[in-house]
Length: 188
Image (cartoon, rainbow, N blue to C red; front, side):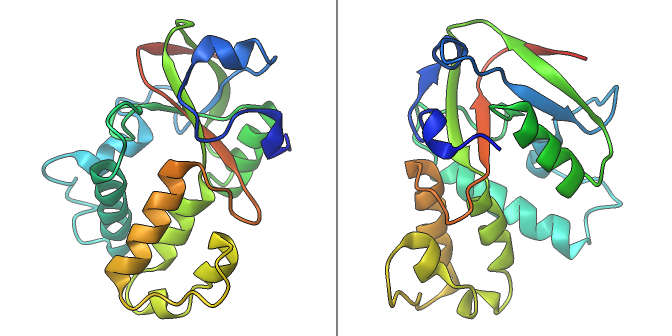
């Protein structure tokens, strides 16, 4: 895994700035011919019928809307961005751990001036674990490096996690993801 300090975290830069550091964006496509980017399904006005009552899907949908609502306006939107990883090892971790080996890994190709930011995707996973009454049990103090912190509500916990994500704060075991905001293609 590439160390987090090998590239800028939480800094909006053109894609070429990462290429100048020898980094290429690797995209993990869920299917060879997907019609939607994976996160776009969360933003459909009406969820697909098979997901409309799935509590896990509805939780992730709520998280994606919270992330999008608090996004700095100059940053790529999770609604429309391409998701990539700054190294092949990062993409392989995601492919094996989060996709169960399904899909394919390819190189994301976009113009050099495409706005790009690297953030820690673990914050999204933490946000997902706050659901129901779990927010009372998730150890945010350690991730936030704020000893003794205990949220008083789900909303407060979610707000702290979302702000940590967009500010580029790293968790104790960061997993970098790139949001690439513009037209792109995937080369397999």
